[in-house]
Each structure stands twice: as C-alpha cells, then as structure tokens.
View 1 (cartoon, rainbow, N blue to C red):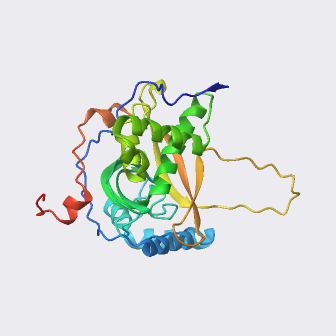
View 2 (cartoon, rainbow, N blue to C red; view 1 turned 180 degrees about the vertical axis):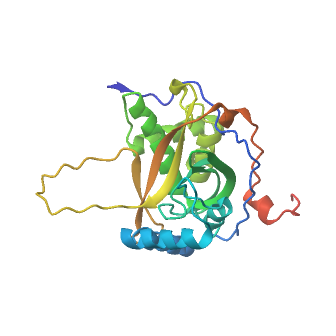
View 3 (cartoon, rainbow, N blue to C red; view 1 turned 135 degrees about the vertical axis):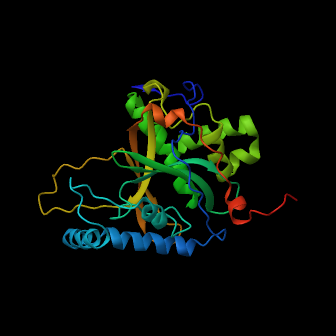
Length: 290
C-alpha cells in the first residue's frame, strides 16, 4: 500500500465545527488530582459493568419515575441531566453508561501546563437523531489526548487504504513538524505539541478533505469490554481499528478511546462558533493579566 507522508498533507479543513445552538459554559475546579481521575474511571467501570438485566430494570424504573411514556416509544431524557453528569467530574468521563452512552467529544484547544494532566476544551455532542452539542473544558491525561490524535490519523489512513505509521514514528514526525514551526520547546512539550497539532498543523484535521469536509471524527472514552468464550481457542479474533487502549495514570485500570466518523449536515458548518473561554477565565473571571 502507499505510504502516507505526514509532511506533505492534504489541504487542511476547518478544525472547529460550527454549532446552531447557544453553547453552555462549563466551570470546573483548577486543581489537578490524578487520584480523583482514577476514582472516576473506576466508578465508571463499575457502573458500565452492571448486569444487563439490572441495567434494563434500572432504566425502566428511572424512566417511569422521571417522565410519562412517550406516545411513539422515544427514550426521552433531559439534556441538562446529560451535561450535569458530564460536569460531575473535572476529568473526561467514561461514557458507556446508561446516561452518557450517546455522548461523543472532539478536542479543540489544549491549555499550556506541566505534568501528566492537561486542561482541554472539547466540543461535546449528544448523538441522537438530532445532534445536541456544547463547548466544555475538562482535564485529560496528555498521553490519552495524544493517542486520540494518533487514532484520528489512523482512521483517515485506513479510509484511504494508506499504511499507518506506528505510534512512535507518528509522534516523531509530528514533533518534528512542530519544532520546525514553533521551536524546540513546543515540540518537546506534550501539551503544547497537542495544541499545535489540533490548531496549527496543516496536515491534521478532524474533517477529512478527501471526504469533502462533510464528515467529522469524534471520540469517546469507554471501559475495556472483554467477551469470553468457552469455544476452541481458534475462535476468530481480530483487532478493532476504531479503538486504542489506554491506561490510568495511576494503578492498573485500563480503558479505551473509541473513534467514530459522523456525516454532518450543512447546519453543522453554517453557524459561527463562539470563542471558547479558557479554564482560567472560567474559574477566575475577574483576574487581570500580570
């Protein structure tokens, strides 16, 4: 197969999709606590691992208690409950849960920071028959974020039947591009490198030009789902190329970043996107520059 050259990319598409509704501003605490991150991941794992019968029973009880039955059988939930659940943690949440199963995200801005956790603005969508969305900031492991960007490029290589780079080779080339454009400091700083890739790298986009910019790639963080069998070891097992495995910054907890390609209507691109407010501005609105 043809080998992709990331140094000679196709024309860059718009990085930020354009909403039709007013955005909701998210306020989160500024303190980075990796222990809390791991606790949230573990709680998400336990929630997502409940037996199907218990989940179905809980779903029926919740829907009966919260709202009358829809005449056409729609599963109706309040959007405020979805965003409220996303906001209960400072960190990007595991979303393969009863409440968040339709939530997907796309990073749009990474704030400078030291350490393994970075503040990142995401475009969050609820993927029902009508897409609802907002811009919101949360914390994420910088390793998870860079794997998310790598997975994005892998998906686009597969769509074009181009051989993927290994993660190490991809990272080296992206760092090289960043160093040439911004200098050694930004090229060697993971947070600044991620922000450069998302906002300035002409060879990177979430809206593939070969699909005429009409499709967008979004992501979600979910638990690692294992399906055991008592059949012979020769039972077929192949890799799922839409997923990449990640590990918590502390402990042995593993989870998955999953990518999905969404076809998008004209309305997604026709409206202007308000500039996202930084996490610092949200937490300290009256602060003045030094």
